Image (tube, rainbow, N blue to C red; front, side):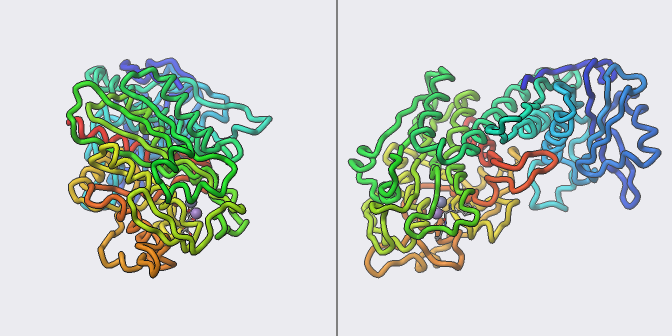
Length: 515
Ligand code: BES
Ligand code: MN
Ligand code: ZN
């Protein structure tokens, strides 16, 4: 999708469709207001508002043909909800809603008016849990572009009758005085949007196509096609994993005919300080059958998305290389299948991780933490001073937080504070869960140092406690994205399928170190 900026009056823009935000400024009775200072746009809305057809209700879409006084062929009103709640978070989804509303109608290009005078509408006190409370033109433009990319993605890759309906061209309209800031915002948001969709393409692929080898190939192709000298990639095979004594990683891979891959992407910008070195470590299980502790067949097909954490890291490295923050970053993806076979590990087996810790395997389905144990430890060996991992790690996290928030865990307040700020900018929802020392008892083993499953209670926490054993004192954040990496149904702003969650937050987090 091509993005361009227009700074002329919205009414003067020739386009298939002009989209404008309507918010409800009313307290009890709806009082819809159009977020544009163009009198012709406001006038075109008047009758529809008077008739009650346009209310400003969140994600409401009303399409008007041949609007009087406008050069646009159509005018689309997109609801932004209550004025006091309206923020970049809503705006992003509204842009996605506009894209998904227009593309099946055969419309290939449209223009979106970046809301004017919208900053600070959100009542912060009333929404301590909310995200994205920035204001101004650049913020509005960013949200519109990011949201449009999210809405433009379709997962129907293998449908023979698919129509490939997508928006090819989006024009964002912003005041001329903000041109510079708006242009930058467009460029950055395009990189983020394309990188998020790159990740979604990886996650969408079925397990028979997206093997560990293929994931490594896709990462390599991405790095090579960017031709950015600061970004390099190395792909290590099973021999390397065994040589490095990554016994936890290998224990998961040993049962599969498909070989594992350890993907290492390094971003080393000239002029970056020696420290920090940020390590992004992703779970890349390209199919999780559960292994010998095999999963029930109902819903097992979904376990092709068990590489979403790894996919997010590859997408994030892409965006980082293009945005060029002056900070060193290493991206590591532990790619493997988890399969049952005569060579597969068994419950009761004891494995020695690269760190030297011994692990009693209670459940071969708790495999994500095993590959990450060695991935995180290896990241430290490579010199990472700060670690973030992302993983579709536990069903327990989905039980705890549902499909709205990802789980965040951290052993470091400074790092967590930074990440919280990044979440506000990205508009992704994540909720902190504890890693108190008391939970450590739940992963003690009678025969080895630790077990790989803490059982049913607090399953998301004990999984995090397991990872914590391998990061030691290194500042660390763990993202459990099991509930949010896959949309279970179509929404007005996003298709059912891979969400590409965490890419934007990871990039915003990394960029916070350039200041
Ligand atoms: N990949 C799964 C977790 C998962 C569940 C991801 C649902 C997405 C949706 C993970 O490898 C797993 O199987 N975890 C087990 C851990 C248990 C055996 C301790 C789980 O959550 O049941
Ligand atoms: Mn599993
Ligand atoms: Zn898994």
